[in-house]
Structure formats: structure tokens, C-alpha cells
Image 1 (spheres, helix red, strand yellow):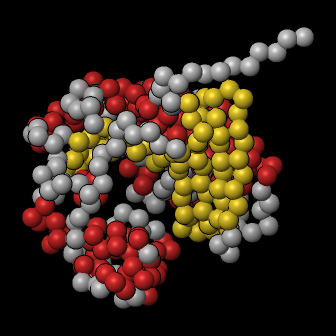
Image 2 (cartoon, one colour):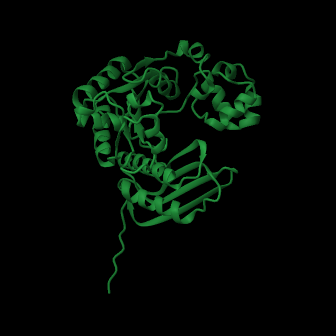
Image 3 (cartoon, helix red, strand yellow):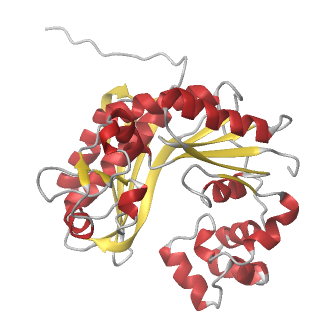
Length: 351
């Protein structure tokens, strides 16, 4: 696995960048996508100019307006972003058939046996010349390091982490930079005296496994730059999901509903790229007391449509959960797939 060449491509402030491209008068201005005429909803994406004011995704719109009163607030145009995402992935396909979409605006590309630097530069060039957008790219020997690299020099970054330098490169970075370390895990690691990735490199792996189970072993490996997961393509999966543990527990159902819109778009895009149709949609909530509830709905007609997934998940959220406790985690999963070449059986009713 040491001779792999993995590229991670992450589009820069994707929704905001598409809006700026399509309306040049917005260039250089603080763009905040997710706004509405009322001070409701949450931020989906903020341009880098808006981020200078402290605006970030999942922030309530009213708070973003306080931080950035000169911001330009735009509604989410899911259909447009999906079309542009397809164009971006079509560029990837020129250079490799081993592509793993992570979301609507990022993907892993396995180019083992080829020149990764030449390919990555060509991908950046094609995205810029053909779509008038920028992407940040990371190159390394595995998925973890490639994704970490792409995040280090945004926007329009190009970063390489070589295997022989990975251990020293990782050592001073904060522990939250490790894949799989969210706010809860970060606090637990801090309590163990682990604040940097270097601290974790030196920690007894047996203690980590006792504390975190299999995840402890994985974190130890990641801290040393080891990640043997393949770039997955064409694997028949049983379910595809999106979830997030929030930095602060949430009581606002509208914010949760907005997150479901994001999840639905990403899942719809993944289904389309895989050629799957889904029949079962599941919403998962973990509350502030760590209790968990899930609610599911099965469709009569399988779909990969964003609005269909969102409408069902939104209905589950609003009608099947009680919100007497705050929410620390929200997840959306699609399953019960119709795979490519599977027959789709339709029911016909006669009077």
C-alpha cells in the first residue's frame, strides 16, 4: 500500500464560488449562501471574504448578519450546484476511473502508477479554464494524508505530503486534524494528555484500544500517517449516510432541517454517481443525554432525487421526533437500494 498515489480534490467555498462566477459583480464581496429575506435558516457556505468576519457553515443566519452586516445573502440553488458538480466529476474521469466521491464538492482519485503531480495540475487547470472555479488539491500515499494536505493551503492550494516526511509533518498539528476526531473525541483525548498528533504517536496503542475500541487503533495508525483504506469505486454498499456531531447542542428544528437539505443533496449526488436508487430513508438523532432515536420511511417508487429524499427526511424530522432535549448529532441514511441492472418492479392498480 506504500506505493499508492492518491489525490484529494476539494472545491473552494463551492456554492459561494459558483454564485460569484455566475454574477461577476459579486467578485471579492462577502457572499453567504443559505440566507433568506427573513433572519431565519443557517449558513450553508460562506466565501473566504465572509469567513474573515467569523462567518462559517451551520451558523444561524441572524448571527452571520450581526458579524457581517455588509454580507450578500443568497438562497441555496441546489439544482445549479449539482450540475456544476457533475461537470467537475467529468473532469476527474479524464484522468482515472478510480474515483470515490465524498460529497458534492470533493472526491478521492487513485492515480497509482501514473504521475500524480502532472494529473493534479491538469485537474486544477481544467477546473479553472473550463468552469472558472478553483479547487484545493492534496497529494499523498493514502486518503487521510491526501485529505489533510488539501485543507492546508486553501483556497486554490496544492500540497504534497510524502510518506517519508509524514510522521514529522503530523507531529505538531492539533489532534482535531486527525480523521475521526470530533469535539467529543478531542475532549476525551485532551483528558488523556493528548493535544497534538505527536502526543498520540507516542501513546500506548493498547491503552487507546481499551478506551476507544477499534477506533483507538485507527487513530494511532492515522497519527503515524498509516491509512490502508482503498479508494472505493464499484463496491456494492448496503447504505450511504451523512451525519454530523455539532460543536454545540441544537434545539432549533429549522437548523436541523437545513442540515437535512445538505445531506440530501450530497446523498442524491452519491446515488447518481453510483447508479443506485434508494427505497428507504432513515433519520437518526442523538440527544444531549446521548440517547439515540431513528425513524425510517420506505418509498413505493425508488429514487435518487434530492427533493424526494429531503421531503421524506424533513417529514420524519418534524413529525416523528420529540424535541424536549437538545440534539448533539443528526444523521441521514439511504438504504434498500436498487442497483444498476436490477429490475425495477412497478405496481399497477386496476379498478
